[in-house]
Image 1 (tube, rainbow, N blue to C red):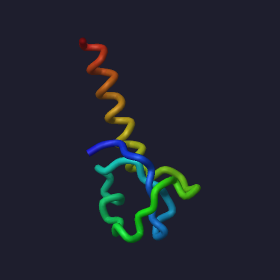
Image 2: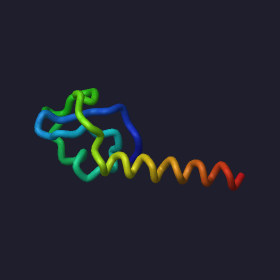
Image 3: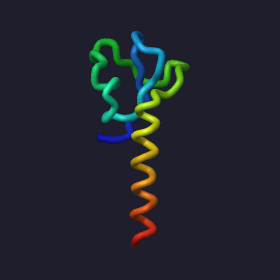
Image 4: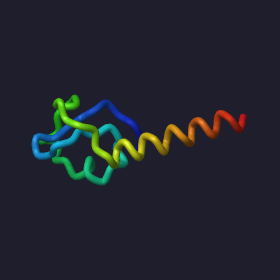
Length: 63
């Protein structure tokens, strides 16, 4: 699970960028639309993406 192209739902006020987000997995496929929809990024997605980026940076420094 990881970062993906932004998508949103007409039923939510945020867009999603991570397949590991607990809110993103609840979106019915019929309600899922590509793009941000001029909404703000989901906080859960943002946190998951930051965590993954920190791991990549830390791993690169260890090499």
